[in-house]
Amino acid sequence: MSRISVMLVSGTLERLQMAAMVASVGAVSGNEVTVFLSMNALPFFRRGSAVRPPAEGEVGRLLEQKKAPPFRQLFAQAVELGDAKIHPCSMAMDLLQYAPEDLEPYVGEPMGLTKFLDDARDGQAWSF
Image 1 (cartoon, rainbow, N blue to C red):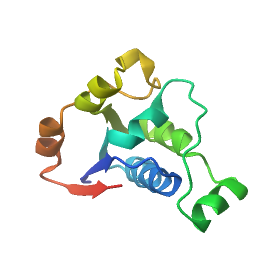
Image 2 (tube, rainbow, N blue to C red):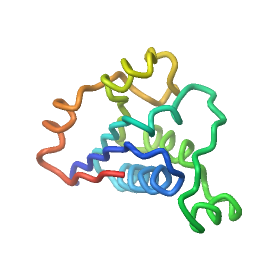
Image 3 (spheres, rainbow, N blue to C red):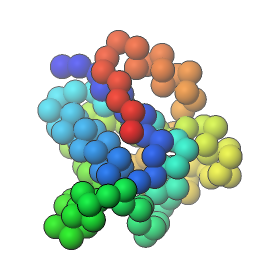
Image 4 (cartoon, rainbow, N blue to C red):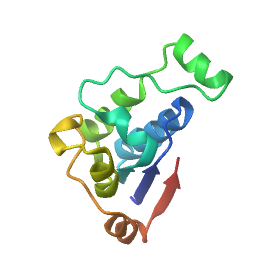
């Protein structure tokens, strides 16, 4: 199959949800998936966080009303059921003063942007 690299920097529900869907479908379809969490997305991956991201529009509100699978659950399934790896941005970790143990268990070790971009060069790259 192929390599899918997802850079997730937004903290809005629709973008978090779409990135999670790309990662989970890509991983369970046999692709190697790497997700890079940075900027406004990273706080939503703190261990035990119940903070809900804001919806950008009607689709975001419908995702909540129709009880779509939550983005956190989809990311966890991508790691559990497929070849997905989720890495927090090392710079964002420093800025937010997070330690690796502050993040959800399915989130791996911090990664730098240079490494992410180097790994992404031979496959599909998506940004949300």
